Image 1 (cartoon, rainbow, N blue to C red):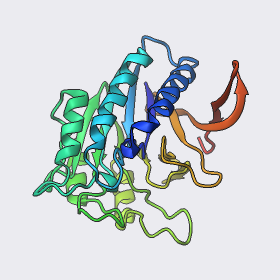
Image 2 (image 1 turned 90 degrees about the vertical axis):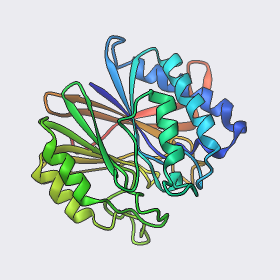
Image 3 (image 1 turned 45 degrees about the vertical axis):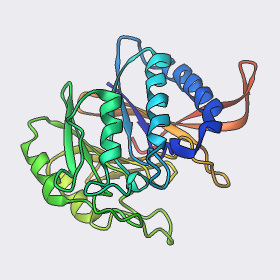
Image 4 (image 1 turned 180 degrees about the horizontal axis):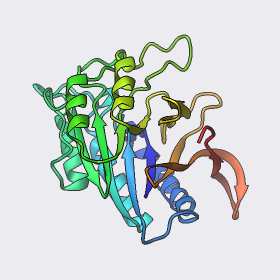
Amino acid sequence: MWILHLSDVHLALGENHKIRHDLFLKLMSEKIEEFVAMKDKIVVIICGDIIYKGDASGYGLATCFFQKMKEIFGYQLMFCPCPGNHDITSDKPNCFHAFNKFVWDLTNETIINFSVDATAVCRSIEDIDFVLVNSAYHGQHTYGCVNLDNLEAILKNSKSCNKIIITHHNLIPVNSGDRSTIVNAYRLLQLALAYDVKAILHGHGHMENILLIGGKKCRLIGVGSLFFPPEDNLNNQFNLVKYANGSITEAYAYRYIGDLHGQGRVGDFQKERLNEL
């Protein structure tokens, strides 16, 4: 199975970005076709921050974007989105009501539905249990936190030997100024190792990360932002990950380079195999 790992798409930045959205979809489709056979399924992991600063009007643009992805890619796509801090809206009592509606509009399924009580959900695809964890469930924008009781209940009830956790916030600070990580990440990692989780996929940091934990039992993989205007030397990116025989066997980061030449155009995604596999 192939996994398309996205995060921090921030599609609420406005219609003026539509040209860039269409370009990225075309380029991403071309890169994926180099590896993935048309008969294969692709699980699209979206690690939160679908919109920008809680502006729920952006979900309409996001729905159009991912529906167009279905049309352009031509593969059978299975979507697994989880919320991020930018997906917190002013809706009461459930500040993820707009996010849940976006998921329904995209998937026509009710299994991925977050609330104050349901802070983690499980979607089974083939023999893999994708455990989606809302690290913004507490409604705070400045840091991540996980309801560990909800998470452990799902991990305990899972019958699959193949479990992958999906969340938004990074678990470990990337630099000394990073105070926005998951504050109870130590216990989260303990649970992941205790229940033989194969990987934890996240976003939030707008940069690629990969780390092996627990004697190489579990891979912690982060991905940069797909669309947020990049800071100096931070590229828009996505990851393409292959899961086979109970583990991640290949993983590639694709970074958009604006002055990269090729195929009669300027600007393309450049592939780099992720280390530590």
